[in-house]
Amino acid sequence: MDIKKTTDELLKILQNEENIQDYIDENSDEMIDSNLSEYLKQLLEKYKITKNEAIKHSGLDQIYGYRIFSGVKSNPSRDKLIQLIFGMGLELKDAQSSEDRKGRRALFPQQKRQQYNICS
Image 1: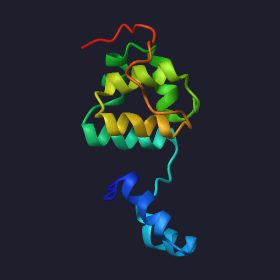
Image 2: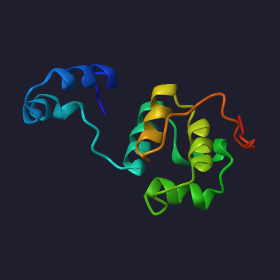
Image 3: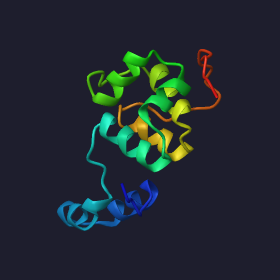
């Protein structure tokens, strides 16, 4: 998960590229190729937090949280994913990336969401 170029940088490169295969060949190490559960596992390592801690801090049911991490629950609701994001203490760019993986629009701070019982 050692991405060096931002999405905006990659978009600019792509817009100026004449051959899509050249773009793919030159930037393949910058492209994300993992599912949500794999990405969450990478984030656990990055943030030095265990699954158990993330689930506990998220306020999610323990079994449900482990199902997300294992990939059994591969399409959690947006609210459940947001709870897990808060529980993991992710930086905004990592939180946005977790939403992108589910094909969802970016988190929007003015959109009212349900209140969560998140532990600190």
